[in-house]
Image 1 (cartoon, rainbow, N blue to C red):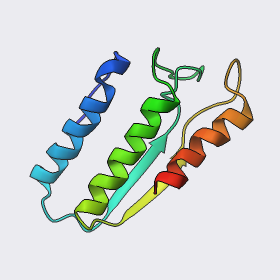
Image 2 (tube, rainbow, N blue to C red):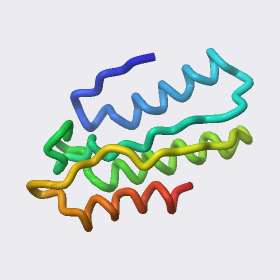
Image 3 (cartoon, one colour):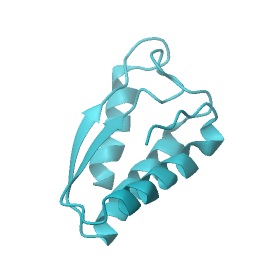
Image 4 (cartoon, rainbow, N blue to C red):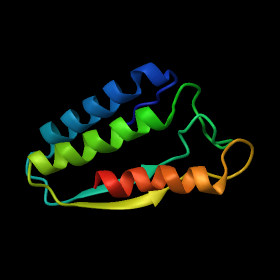
Amino acid sequence: MLQVVTDARRYLQTVWQCLQHAQEEWPLFALCLYNAGMDIHQDCANGGLAGMDEFIITLREEMVFRWCNERGIPVAYALAGGYTGGKMTRKRLVGLHRVTVCSA
C-alpha cells in the first residue's frame, strides 16, 4: 500500500492506516522489516516535508514499535535516510536516529 503524504498533519494518520492495512492483508506476521527513514524531516534537503519535526518522528517510532509489540511481532529495523547539509547537522541526524533506537 503506497501512500504519498504531502501534509505533515496527515502523516501519523497515514502511517496508522498502513499498519492497519498490513494487519488485514497479512494477519500472521512473522517479522516486521522497518525502514526508519529520517529523510522526511523538514530540515533534510533530500525529501524533507514542511512541518515534519522530531516530535512527529518520535510519535511515529513509538507507534510502529508499540503496534508490533502489542501483536508479538519481532522487528528488524534499519536506520535509514536523513542527509546532512543545510540545517541538518550530523549531530541532529544522529539524534533523530537515536529516537528510533530508544523507541525500539
